[in-house]
Image (cartoon, rainbow, N blue to C red; front, side, top):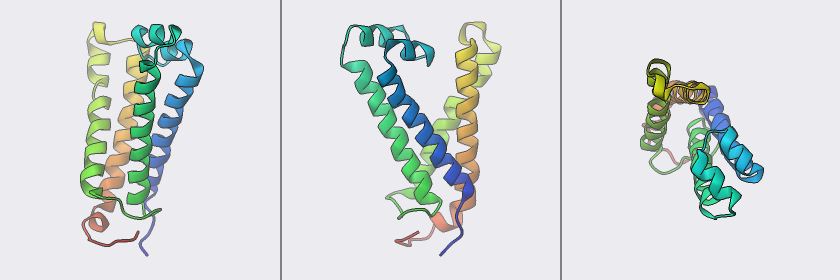
Length: 148
């Protein structure tokens, strides 16, 4: 049995928190859509009782939960999932690319604003946690073992 990877455990927990926050936005309604920066179209759609803001937000929550599962599997807490290396590299890249939006948020006035700066910084941290965890897990991820 290999040693657990605390970086990917942390990444999984962070992704689960993000997933739960998205579910909270659905429950919190229009004010929460606005507070968490989903955009006025989402908030107005939620105010009108339209289905699509909740569906999109639920889809994002589901993706984040799957990402958490990949992190936990990569950490050795659960059975390996299909395409482990590919998935963890893709998840890491997505988080880092979204986190890289911190640069224009800090340097381009039209892209700035508290929400963009804070959310970009948070997601950059997520990406760095996944990056460190994936790099540390790489030798194990390269093996064709069936169980963690």
